Amino acid sequence: MSTKLEALMKTLETTKVAVIHAAFDEKPHTVAMIDMPKTLSTKEMLEKAFMLTNSITDAWWTNEGVTKMFPDKTCRSTSTGDMVLIGTEKYLCEAEGWSKV
Image 1 (cartoon, rainbow, N blue to C red):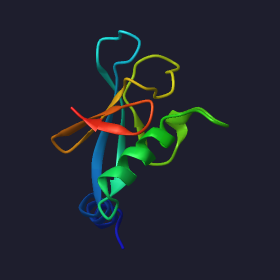
Image 2: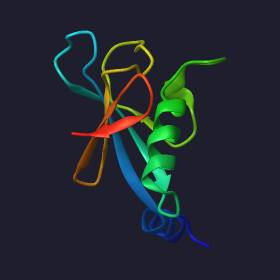
Image 3: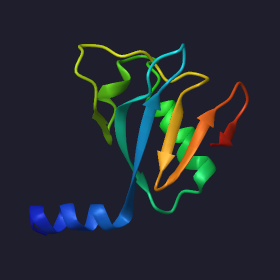
Image 4: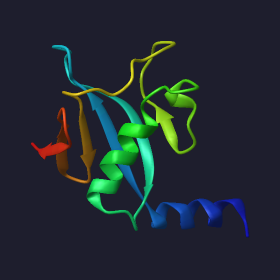
C-alpha cells in the first residue's frame, strides 16, 4: 500500500482529540493533538488522552500518536482542571472522572 493511501486510511479510522491545559490559573492553551481510534467510546478517549499526556517513564510528548503543540522544551502532565476536546464537545478533568463543559 502506498504511503499516501496509508495516511488516508489512518485519517478515516481516527478522530483528532485536543488536550488543553487550563489548570493552575493558566490561560487555556492546546498542548497536544492525539489520533484516537474512532472505535473508542468518549470515556475511553478521555482516559487515553489523560494517560498519553502524563509523563511516567518518558516525556509524554514522545508517545506514539501524540503531536506536540507547545513551543517550549518541556510541558507539564495533564492534571485536574485541564480539558479535552473531542469533536465539538469539551470535557473538564475532575478529581474523579470527567464533566462536560
